[in-house]
Image (cartoon, rainbow, N blue to C red; front, top):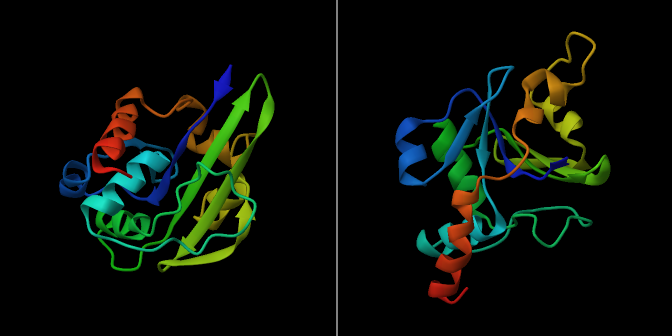
Length: 163
């Protein structure tokens, strides 16, 4: 069974208005976190639509489909209701136990450190593993195995915008 997600891990529930304004698919997690699913097409589309420019300060070694658009900072700010949000941008790509994962943590809107594991990112967000499980299982990320199909439409929307 696979695990393929891309998303923002955010402290607390997401702002309801921002969820609607940004067409976010949100999933509440344990540990007081929320997962906002996205894809690189989603972030490219919203970057163009919101008139944002530039790329995130990301370390080398991330896959080509890891979201890089600077609009992610604006999205995280809207979802958290803070001007300089703290969050993690994560990606998993596993099938049958083989694969990889990547995470970047942003504190007060600035990237802190290099590429991390999802567990490292969760610890940076204050999650403590409980009950003999790791942080990933403590917050319930295993229940969110795939990016929702509804985000597939952003590939066509990007094509319509010529991006």
